[in-house]
Amino acid sequence: MAITAVDRIRDTLKPGQRLLGLDIGSKTIGLALSDVTLTVASPAETIKRGKFAADAGRLSVLIAEENVGGLVLGLPVQMDGTEGRRCQSVRHFADNLLQHIDLPIAFWDERLSTKAVERVLIDEADMTRKRRAEVIDKMAAAYILQGALDSMP
Image (tube, rainbow, N blue to C red; front, side):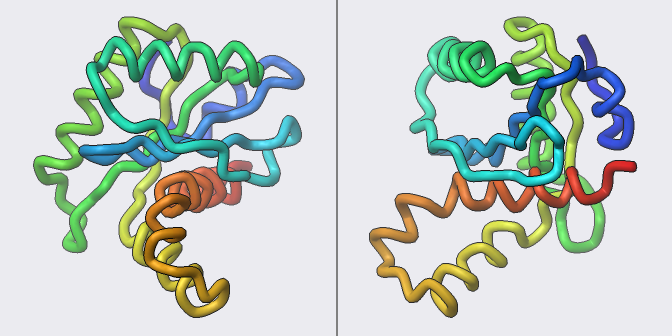
């Protein structure tokens, strides 16, 4: 498959397929899954990054287990709207992933997603720093995926 616009990814899915959201960091990858109606995103897990082949292998397993038909990757655009090194890294990850996984990939502007989730976890959930560290990446992935789902026609 290929890179596609987020508003077109729904058209590539078969009935009953879900979307997988990814928050790609330098040390971890947060994952979130949509429901089959593409309405709600839920945090799934956090992968501790290792070699790319191992990361792609874990994603392949999850994709098969959860009937995933497409991926939404958070794109860490800078506050001024430009793309820096982190965006290049995510785009490179997507290009490499397309060599292993035959699914459409869309990008979603994830500016401030981690900060927004962290604020909720501190203010509303009153979580300890240790507990926040355990869940923040998959919660950020859910935030990213939910934004993409909400924008779809």
